[in-house]
Amino acid sequence: MAKDSVRKRELSKIAFYRDQMARTQKLSSFRIKALEDIIRFLKDKGTVYLVRIPASEKIMAVENSYSPEFSEKIRSISKQYNVHFFDFSLKAKDYRYTDGNHMYKTSGKIFTGRSQIPF
Image 1: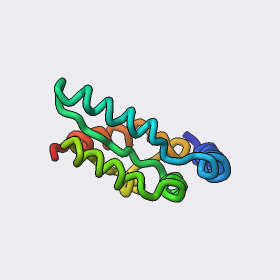
Image 2 (image 1 turned 90 degrees about the vertical axis):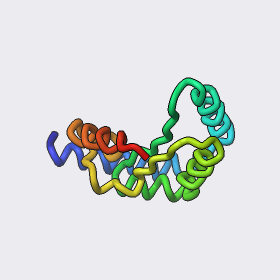
Image 3 (image 1 turned 180 degrees about the vertical axis):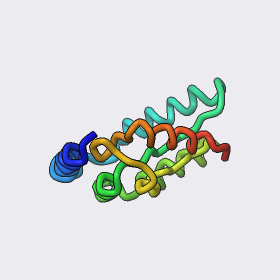
Image 4 (image 1 turned 135 degrees about the vertical axis):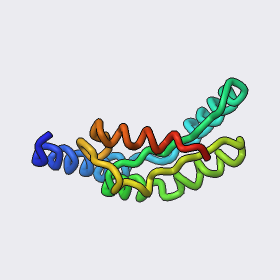
């Protein structure tokens, strides 16, 4: 992928996240409840892992601006239900992105390998 087109897509996505999503979105109690329902449903079927996949540093900064407590909320839920939480949100620099939040195929393979490290 050409660096110019990647940069253009990233800037467009950052502007959208910052100017539209961050101003209108909030952590949904309905979705948190749905996550807890899914965890309860899956717990007796196998091991449950919660994973926060990183995006580019700028996208992560926007996400953290409108939901600074997100990782802590998920960490709390993981403790409540005794499931593992892998928080890769601080590892944004470790990967390359095609548009700010989708990883290049090679980065996705690296990420998948790291995600399988036992807790």
